[in-house]
Length: 173
Length: 396
Image (cartoon, rainbow over all chains, first blue to last red; front, side, top):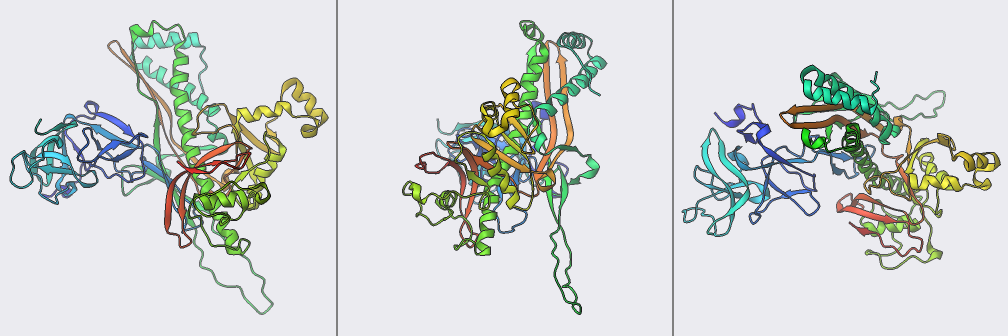
């Protein structure tokens, strides 16, 4: 059964009581951030996509298209007018501290390889989670000093589950 | 009906509730909630400009995209009349109105935590902690969100008016502002092509021709203090948009200029009153005013006078959940938190306006477009009504 046939939870599966999960608030920046992407705060405290060299990431818990994340001002009498978007509730970033997280494989950066149990979790394009093999792996081994944020322990029913840590662990150190 | 408590009574109730817990704690939460609500109504200036309306879940729509509610509000459909002769009949029009949606979001205080032991070290009444740390935070965020949209509306409304004048042939140029220089040129000289981008040189006084209410929703005043001339200029903006100004908003810093109003500004009788008691009426020139003393650059700064039409020309401020207060004691630890669910939306931004006194400045979000409506830039623009005309508006 594919994950979207059993839509009883959000895109980010959080196998933990919400009260046990630390969160940080980020202001909406200039880009939309889908649920399940790795983000960080820029100098102004606004949410931007994390990159594969960052050593601290947060996992976005709610899509920015949700009304409680951002609002926009529009000129309703001119369809050619631009929309000016601003933060309302902002984004909620999950602070990983050994937190079990499941994200559908379709949301991962699978340009090189699909996630599999035992892979390390790194940051792919546009903040997508990306699975890389342990050092010395055959297809896509993680380079030295590339931080990773957890390890995949199960891929089932289209969901890749991993233990998430916000503080990146560099390989080869 | 709000309960009235003196600080002593409230502190006694608080101490009792902490010990008893259960129902007493709930009663305290309710009583404090009403107390919080009362203060909010008094203090958030956006509620004086767009009076809040309470809505229920039944009046809202569920979003199909996410787990939140939306309120769909109607916009008045435009219509025209025509003159025809006795044998003619009017054109046929299939009528259709427009709608816009208002989304709800939560404004919450921090979740304050303290131990009972540490609370004993405080001499100040606990009600003050609640008022200062929770109520103030929430009301300020309401106003911040309101002013974010007001400032965005200033740019969009100026763009709208500029394009309308271009369409009418009043301004012999092409539509839209493609960059900050074109906008600044227009505001300073009513000629967006006055000098090339980027801003090259200060405008000589002879070339200065500040855009007025007929041209823009952001006007540079030649007045240094708040007076009736400044008020006249800003309310004219609404008159030029086919609506009537209702409320203006300014910092208490500028409002204090009324104390120095002389016979010339206020007449003999009123000046006598001002000298004794200050200006004590709720309107000036028939327009309601509200002021704020908050020192927050995201709200209203000295030198800015904002003006708004009646709410029916503006939008809605909706309250889904009025301010709720939560208080809990677990062991030695006391937790306090307050939150509310609100939504606000401007269906019509055309009457939102701002006058900058000499030396005043405002930072607004902008989205520049070329004449073909293609986006050419975005960001925030700091607009300064500089006395010497040497200030170059800089993207932030």
